[in-house]
Image (cartoon, rainbow, N blue to C red; front, side):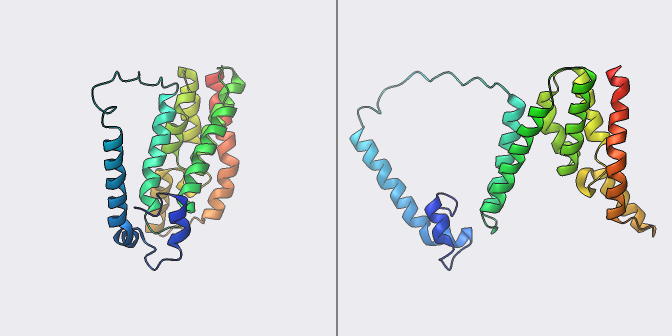
Amino acid sequence: MLPVSNLTNLLAVARLDRSDAAGFVALLGGSAAVAILVSTLILALVFRRALRGSFVPAPSPAIADRPQLRFAATVVVVMMPLLVSGLEPWMPATAAALVLVLREALVAVMGEGTGPGDLWRLAGAGALAANVGSNLPAYLALESAAGTPERLAALLIGVNAGPLITPWASLATLLWHQRLKAVGIEVPWTRYALLGALAAPLTVFAAVVPLAL
């Protein structure tokens, strides 16, 4: 029914005049509804005896990492409207995959202990994630790997003191830059990024020292 429903639709949509989602549904929505109805009726007739009665539901699967599940679900929810927004489907799909892979990679290098090295790694991962995306999503993505107060504090240091390189790393940065422009003070983003690339690692490293001690 939708261009993203299967690969054949995606291959065909570029050849159709109705390349947007609404046009695709207008062309094939009725046919898809009929196909679903016929399939359902056949199954209901052939397996009418097996479909009677009741069954014992299987136990719910154990969730080993609930924050990771929530993060992945959020990525999917954000991605779905983009798949039918008119963008090439590979664009939001690739972006979502990169976000999930980046989170897995960061979690893998964050360590598990509370020694100085582990805390610096965790804070550094938080700072990196904040500058790639933004500090709030970075915190939510990495929170599950910060299982102790010390590790949670290190993550907070990374996502709060580290987003100094990219403009979008923190909403506060964007608001600060907007206010400066409003009063006639120009701060080029290139200069900001260069100074931030120096300040962010030094600030995060130094801020973790009292925590490690």
